[in-house]
Length: 299
Ligand SMILES: [Zn+2]
Ligand SMILES: [Zn+2]
Image 1 (tube, rainbow, N blue to C red):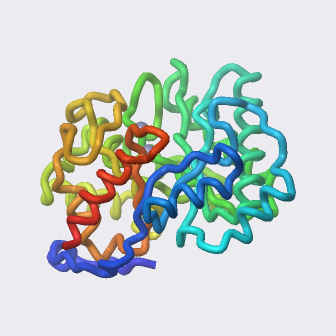
Image 2 (cartoon, protein in one colour):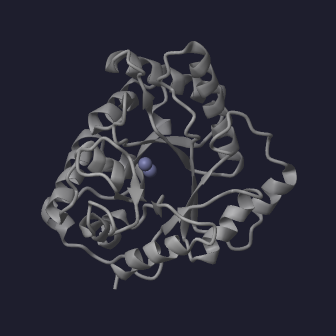
């Protein structure tokens, strides 16, 4: 568990594990989950994020025993693998049928994540669809409770991701994430994920080192560092506070390099996985470039 330290100590950035930070990218599971391990390893990832099924479909066949076997017995997996829930899921949906599907899909994804031994899956908390924040939070909390209840012997946690605040999406402030955790019947199964692009798009000015650490300080106060599970490292195509989520390659967007340097160099985040979700082709060459820039920050 990372220690809480003062702002002064925090600014003194220390290179903790220059040879192997927990760094990587989102990897496709096309061909089976073990293929994601290989894809990640092929470009030197020590941490990867995966979907636990096709992220644009509601249902999926259970993993075949051979697929699980290939995944579990992989000789050289990245040090840390975690999941991202399907984009279709909206725990805040007001349409009862859509909400039921979301709960079912989420509990199924938690079970699949447990089969792969993933410590957590990242989830966009949900959108209220015009019914207002209060109704949205009520539905999100009860949907998450239902999904955890349906997989109650499971271990996998849900990491609520900060969002850009597009449309009626909730989760674009730390207070939003705190409300969900506080009202949940399963707070021990909830953690969070911070995405640099989403923070910036939601209006958190992390474009300077000072601004970045102020945002971290606010996070520590409202949520607490023991509830931070991962960083998503993405630059943003859209400006500060745009509420429009468009990921861009590191250093090519509106954020600049400052927060990425802080995250990469700070000892405080050395135990946390940091993964890219930037646009790429099948040969992963864009990931190689972005990871090269990030690793270069350790030099
Ligand atoms: Zn993200
Ligand atoms: Zn995003």
